[in-house]
Image 1 (cartoon, rainbow, N blue to C red):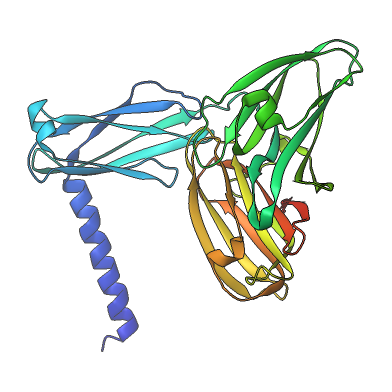
Image 2: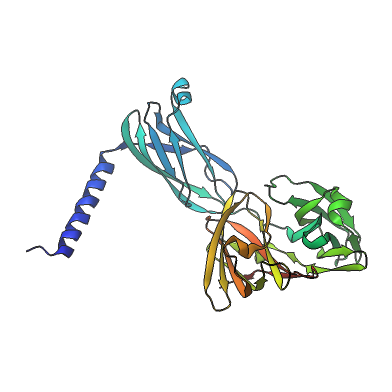
Amino acid sequence: MITPNLARIALAAALAASTAALLNAADPLSISPNRNPVVPGEVVTFTFSPPVVFSGDAITFNFGDGTESTVSYSVGCAVIGGCVEVTHAYAGPGEFTVRGEGTARGVAVAGSTTITVSVAPPDQGRYILTAAHLPGFGGTFWRTDLEVHNPGTVTASYIIELLARNQGNPDPPRASFTLSEGRSATYPDILQSVFSFSGAAALRITPIEGDVLLASRTFNQTPNGTYGQFVPAHTAAQAIVSGKAGRLIQLSHDPSLATGFRTNIGFVSASVVPIDVEIRFATAISRHLGTHTFQLKPYEFKQFDKAFELVTREVVTSGYATVRTTTTGGVFFAYASVVDNRTGDPVFVPAALLP
């Protein structure tokens, strides 16, 4: 007598054998990158053969980094004699196996190749994760001052770049400066004074010669003075990379916006390709409130105002958030700004890297 467990094992084995036989029966699919190795962010064109040329043809490519792309038949394929290319860019270094499987010329095909993504030059930029020149909730008016100091004994030169909110910034606006040894330079309301920009942005400061120290303050400008938060510069060593996670603590949110606090959570991509990011919200006693996923474009700055409302409408008197990227090779920064609902007084909370 055959037991149910044995029957299930036998069925699984039969299905596996059937799948293997199907793959073995597929015609070979050749896949060739236009260059190998490449660097992160470099667009690779994979040429494949046989082409997608008949109605119903489609080949799905798995790039080995958790992403896929499908080349399906269209009229354009027939016009050019067959579609034979698919493109991809990798976020980080490694050796990846690219697999293609589907139908070409009406016949099942399958094949693979490998590609090496070299280590990119280190990111020398220092990131100010949030800066502003804009009105905010509750009659606030946000401004950012930047301070640059040259601690060395030679003249320093550096570039300041503006990473505007809610857009990719592969080629951002930039301004170049020099600073004598032992001197400090202050850039009041930097978004407006240097870039004539109104809105929210992150800043990237990259030394070209010498070195610089950085500090910034984002504050609410009132008729009676200012109050705000210190925002430090972050280096690549402080970034959250794929396979790791960051934790934001001391978070609170009162949806009434009349008492208590509200929490804004911000992100800055340090990746040359789009990356997928996940925020997991929890209470102080580790009760899961929900998860929000989104995509960051290359070097995009994004902030979620009243972030807990992405997953709940309840009052959170003490909570935390865990952030990570699911894109292989992805790199980003995260922070929270916890704002007093009655006064607009903010506190900057950088993400702590988890072991």
